[in-house]
Length: 457
Image (cartoon, rainbow, N blue to C red):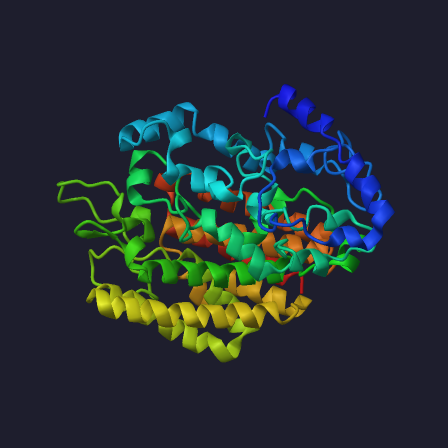
């Protein structure tokens, strides 16, 4: 978003609305007739008395959230740049290869690169060019834009009027997954065709994505008004919801097939995209994965989130861990059979993953448990499953998240966390280039991190 647009936003002050709130008090909390669910547009949030201040100087909230969202270079501003990505060289190239016309006009792109509000739910200040705006995540503000700053308003009041409770990790994951894995809405699914045309590979880790996109402070006031689930819970719930979403979409006949072939989006990219040679001295780079009972040569389902969820379940939900392991193995095996059996197995896997999400969401994670999960991610049965790039990359994000959460919550000394950083940097280097991923070398790095992590006990 350019400087002229920012100036225009800052000129749209919420002062008049705020004055009205002070006069009528809680009465202003009543939603305007016919506006519930309407997406009023980013400009509706942009006044200098609301979220458009150039500096963080608000008393209750920072009030510069819009400026953070608009950051032109950092990850925090990625959502505001989503629409512009469609007109970039890469965006134009993908659209040309797919034959869909200009990407900025294509429904298959706009579901995730802009606010997907239907035309009937767009207010006067709504603009597709805003990209992934406030209401893309927080929900249409027509019913709660006034109530959320009224005197005496509560978070529960706003949620009742349509605000999405993103402080709830399950609600947050459901929203994020729509674009960061796939949803049932129009334009909210990255097909193999899109990736073949140049779209980047999609991966999901809720806590890390939350940290990169955070536009607010989780301080004592925030916790008193909403609550803070903590990074470990957010990570664990996110992994469970990701597996649920993957299995559910795979079972959806509208998403699972591409002509005579399955929708290859669901499968591990690098299991097929490997060097091919007729030289008899060449040995296949593929490694057998102990948790995938599939025939040699069959494409494996991308199980990066399953691997993480298995590690979390063994520590934090032992009553469901064996069931999840059985369901995930049965699902892998069923894919090599017939479609009907695979759909049934996907449904069972999704149900168990939802049960794990509920279990994680209802409990806290103590220091000892978090360290146990960290050890499970880094070693033993889980480490043997790092045979492919996607699982390795997900593991590195998990380690970073878990160590960061322990340090942020004062459960480990920050100096101890810093001692792990050099090896963690080596782990990130090992997954920087998908085509250069070497499972044996990666597992050796993870083993060294595991040893350093055990020293923190």
